Image (cartoon, rainbow, N blue to C red; front, side):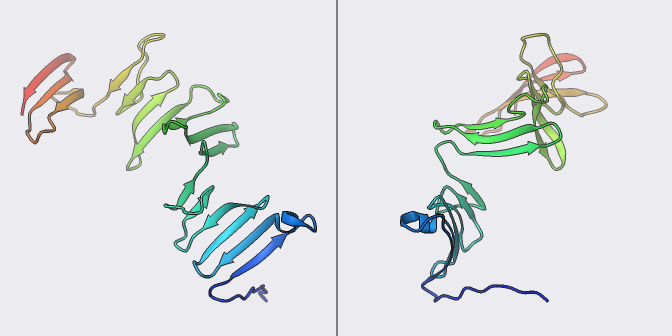
Length: 193
């Protein structure tokens, strides 16, 4: 049948498992798993320093003892790595010391011609390709070497066939707009409400 191990401790105490590689100082507790009953959190220690914590809400903190979300990474340059073992490609979400969020597709250029895709409701809505071209509604088509492209692709059928539009709208509570759009192969401009 099933077997187990129970470590019993009081409601204001903690249960511990220690891993030692010596007989003095921090060598006695280089690795630890501690459960703190007073606050109901589980702590993991490596090299005698807290490495990870799971709080009473189930939030996981790596590099922080106060996770504010389901997974909270904290360091001088936190990064979340994902590796596709088929091509050894790495996707990285990281943050630099200036507070910039960095999305990196194929970090070491193993596959080449990678892109960053944004999907909504199961369908691709926007793509940034390896050349820096941005496609909204569909992948951007090349405009020539060294030319950056922002392509807006609509799905309207029939007439008018407005393929894509740039809309400028006032934020002062009025409904005034200015549109620039493609209509049946022509560039059109509209102002109004």
